[in-house]
Image 1 (cartoon, rainbow, N blue to C red):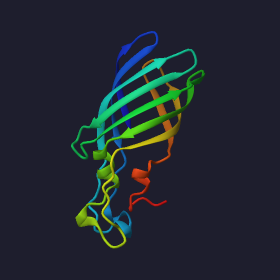
Image 2: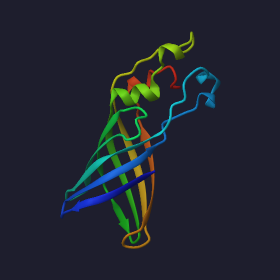
Image 3: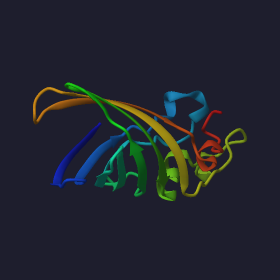
Image 4: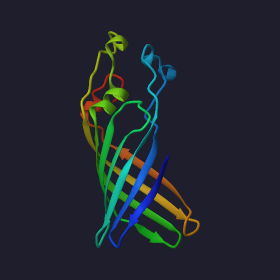
Length: 168
């Protein structure tokens, strides 16, 4: 769900443009509990990512914004990763923290006044910050082509987890 173009690669610093499909959306008919809610669409987010290699691992900062006008929000992430390379396969465990703007959290986790019910009160979250861990596997087919799979676990900020549409 992510593509990028690296436009600078130095000895320690790499900078790239990124675009990624965000799968955060849902349809109101996904659950009877969401009945009466407007659908929330996924979006393409794009921006820039910069990575710095130190003697042990890689620090990355990524700044993206909604390119489709779906939620008009932004997300900034900071992460630290340690790659383990074995021929064509690279495993990369990492830890990080994400900062989501209030526009992003409100669109996906908020409940508008006209969507509120007795069981689902109105909810207007603000920005959120939450840590995460990721495990990425990258298989390189050639110098220019590779395939990547990434698994991520987030510990949601209370601005998200307190939403009446988020199950504990």
